[in-house]
Image (cartoon, rainbow, N blue to C red; front, side, top):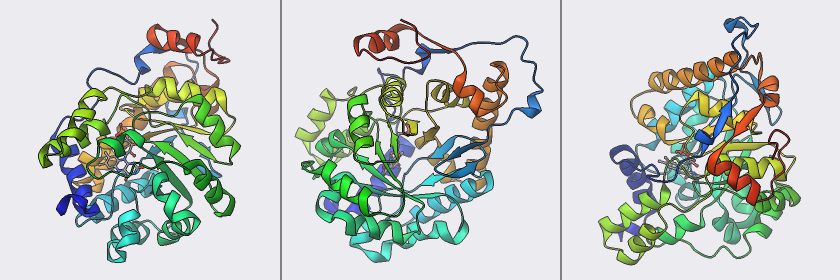
Length: 363
Ligand SMILES: Cc1cc2nc3c(=O)[nH]c(=O)nc-3n(C[C@H](O)[C@H](O)[C@H](O)COP(=O)(O)O)c2cc1C
């Protein structure tokens, strides 16, 4: 049956992401509850504002990551090539979509490997599901890293997505142990990410304890994977899956809250992602403690057109980040990390009830 094929699913994801509005409808990222402090006399020349940063031992032009999206189906190599050309041109890191399909069908590996043809030296992050590692273990992790000569491995955790997805894999038992074993034997750093429901402070701490190098919070408020799978479930007549999807449409920890949770619970670098839509969002993410901010779906629309479009979109984001930094009087990312913020509304309520102690938030 078509719906059990990973390839068909990957193409469905791209089609639905391009054609439908699949953002969260009620829940937001809560970045609107993070206020940055305007400095009317910045004592800076705008042209001197420097957005470059260091992450996992490499220097990048901005604290921005192209989040994993695709590969493993016909046509996806063009998307990956265009994203890779942008990553190369702008000197930012890039993550691939899940490589599971290419492990099962090696002829699909080309849609991932193409990245190394056009951008042999970019910082490239391999991708596999945590749930797949429970069965595939270290061997699977090594295989996806080797496939693209990756600089790091991202392991995605997506329990709600798997529940709503027709024929999803729902056995997460042993997933942390599987991640621990991968961390212990892989030569590259391991990033653990969610894809839109967020990672809590408690889980971030646990992940740090088992040796994970980076947590990517993948919070709620951006691309809604429950909605995407609900649309697929309805299209294919999986009514139970679709109904669960409807109930849990707005489930998840908003990205700003997840970022604060992860940053205050660990000492490892945190990537803030899920609904990052502007350079101002990036500035807010860094100011509340993230080391990088990741973006996915907005870049997909450009990547299907061409690499120039991706580059233009990302340059705009970087200019907005630079503008925010200028207006805050921050010459570089280090001073943005130290800049004061004010947290309001529901985010403040969350911080209080969760007993979070953030050096910049005075309760
Ligand atoms: C078309 C598409 C496919 C995706 N596929 C994957 C994937 O295979 N593996 C993964 O870890 N994340 C995947 N993601 C999730 C993103 O990496 C990201 O976590 C999520 O979309 C939230 O970011 P956004 O709001 O900027 O889109 C995908 C996202 C999109 C838009």
